[in-house]
Image 1 (tube, rainbow, N blue to C red):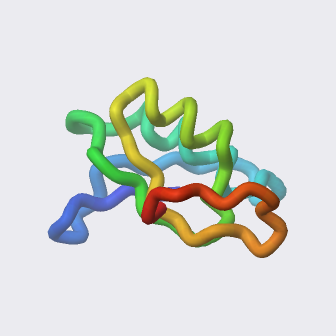
Image 2 (cartoon, one colour):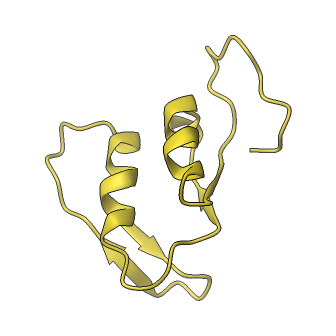
Length: 79
């Protein structure tokens, strides 16, 4: 998994086993950031996770992702 800045330049890269679910790699990738933490993490519906929202919220990072199909309680925010 890689993180890029607004210009598309890589600022963090984390290589893990291909069997892990992508959302579990988000925290480990952000730990290896070369610069300061981003304001937002934009991802696919796989990133729609309450636990990820809480973890990243501790660092002031907002997750922006569409709702998963099976989400029971919809969030009122945009992400």
